[in-house]
Image (cartoon, rainbow, N blue to C red; front, side, top):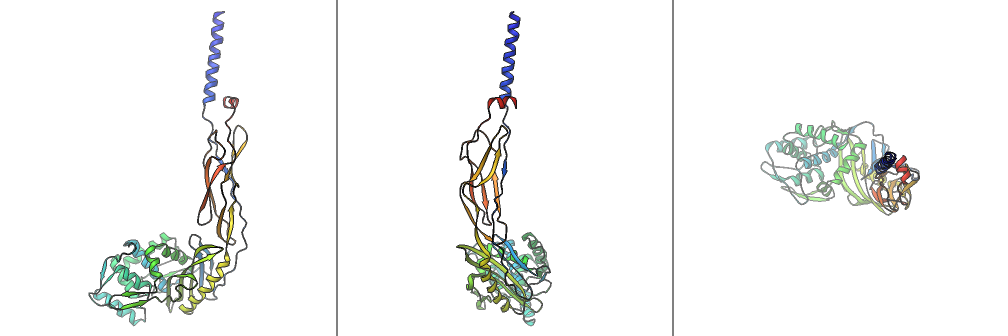
Length: 390
């Protein structure tokens, strides 16, 4: 009898121990099933493209929005100097307010001036022994579009024109400009080519650089030995234009890469566009205004996420569902016809978890505005029987 009692007691202890062990097993990870918000948008607009050449239009943070006849690379004239200036600043960075190292003009630099002058290229006169700062060289390239200073600057920064082009071709690839080839620093060569679509990427890079974006806004500057130099971009300030780069050669025609600050639907946006192959530079510049003004109607503010909108569900293995909801509304600027971009990040769920516990966030729009995501209700723990017998 005593032995039977002992066996029974031992069995109870074993069962209790096994049950306790089963109960203490970690609960399974509960992952979220994300629900992507569906946001209706208006029909896209048709931009008034020029009948000549090629063109593209985009906005900072949006990338290229629209394009026209951009499949084949074409000469880009002095727009190439924007590549040159960015490459120099990548190799030899400047902080705002810095002039940078001095560049001493040599006989070869004077010859560059004479050569470009003979070819009717844009130049600034220089003399042997003259010194200009790195910043002044960038101003000379970007304002009056001095071809000779572009060549002088890359020889100083990279050692030679060949070393520069090797660097620049990799540099534009890194920017994402896949159809661009750099053959020279000034853009005078017709072998320096790109597409309007690629150049929108370039324009955004220029405007993101504090030093260069400040230079292209300048209407004039002072250059050693010359005095006052003026920006050939006579549209500065018109229609919110921030500048960037003009260009014209026989092979390229008139070219214009522009950026403009606009207020559309009550929000500020920086648009970027480019026109290549115009009859003249001035024709390209005039048509840019038509594009800029027409593009205003292409933007709209949409509600990407509503307050308390379900953006994910947690299906509990022991039964039931708990939802994650947005804590607020997200209104974003969007290009009509484009899908509204959203990005939802929800963490794995631990239980028990109280209502309104933060479990992640949702972002929307090209500006990546965000709000938190919380549980819509308490996530209950499983019953003891489920924990043991699962």
